[in-house]
Length: 138
Image (cartoon, rainbow, N blue to C red; front, side):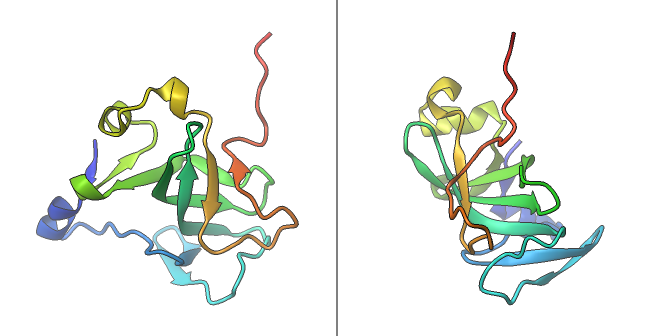
């Protein structure tokens, strides 16, 4: 179900999204502080980031997602939300409705790559794969 901005504004829901270039460091289950550093450190903490998702077909989409720096898989795939301007709504990447709005099949969209607006302090500057630890079906 999309998170529509009008519903969030109307209901005063405690939902917010990072703006371009913003990163929040999780400091507790429901709290955080803005990261002031120029790069996201690989310090074992949890971050909420503005960035982009690049679909397999090359489409680049504004996104918010969470990363954990205690593992080199980084991305928490269930946290990925895509902003669709014409809908004024955020969609979780797993929502079928997102692909209908984009006019693309999941097969043409996945796997995606991702890139935070603020770079990771990592030798590879991305974009990064959807999953560093791909499983192989036997």
